[in-house]
Length: 149
Image (cartoon, rainbow, N blue to C red):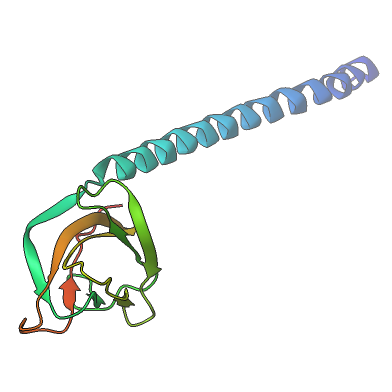
């Protein structure tokens, strides 16, 4: 092998390394883009699945309180519970469920019907009407939202 051939091979070596690095970076960027689009699709899909569940029949209870449970019967902590106007639009009061899934609102003098909404990022929002009745078989209500978000 003559000196010119060695010199020529040594001068082409940086170009070969640069082109190989560019190809590797290009493949890497394609993977990153594909993963980003896949994640964006699933996040958008998850948000689209959430829907408000409305229980039409009034729930009877002695007090404006209760427990929020998942479908397996486990309590759901940090669920936002809102007391709303009768049409469900305006929020009057807000509470959070505790670690055991319990919530409580003081009852308001003269008011016997409450519109309650339960919101949490992992669950479909649930809205129901609670009607106070001192002869109700239970002290509070049990809310069971469906998985959604």
